[in-house]
Figure 1 (tube, helix red, strand yellow):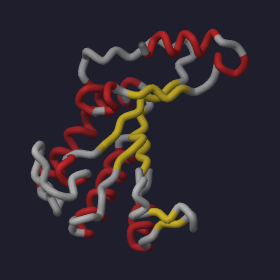
Figure 2 (figure 1 turned 90 degrees about the vertical axis):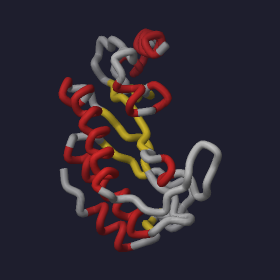
Figure 3 (figure 1 turned 120 degrees about the horizontal axis):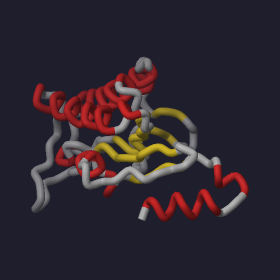
Figure 4 (figure 1 turned 180 degrees about the horizontal axis):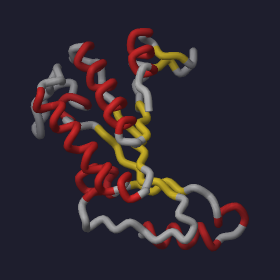
Length: 169
């Protein structure tokens, strides 16, 4: 359990008593981690953050072609899409941020394959801006190196870089 994890870390000596801990939410899913069934552990040091991922809708963010469980979407940004994002980020804010519990979106992103580039750019910006506006820390996850060149240590697209850098706390 998460509580056992905290108890072991805090009692193991050294800097572990005061170490900051990142606690994965249930399946790192927003709805499951914000459900009252997910119990926030007791940390005597109060030095932890909850971690979630954001790939909603997965039919846009993850799917590059139709699968049994969903039809791949190439675009994002309808009023329903924006409403869904805001609803999810507001849920995180109400459940954790408003109670003084920090949250890190340890992963968010969207693949470029078979996608409208402007939709991907809009999604990445909207999640980043929406998270920052609610004091949630977003981390762009780009394991595919479509947005970020790890070898060069730089964003691949200057426009996307500048757009993400424009987000203010």
